[in-house]
Image (cartoon, rainbow, N blue to C red):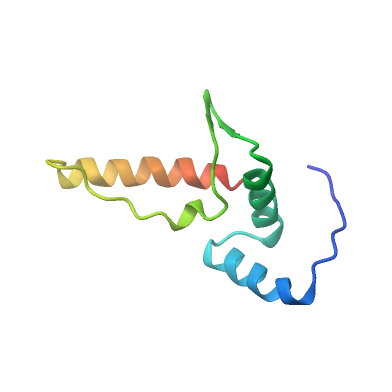
Length: 88
């Protein structure tokens, strides 16, 4: 990863820090995620390429019809790891 100096306007600084905090990532990772989203750069996770929105960690998973509690927890874990990897 390379370092780039970016001047953040004062009116953006607060919301930027707040959103990064909500997602539990540092501002640099959040800025990179926003840039990937805007530039439509896919995130590669293993053999999978996904277009991940910058706020992907705010997802709410709905239980599938007939899904057991164990299956639901497994799905939440899988998507949590996948979406977390998208914010690397």
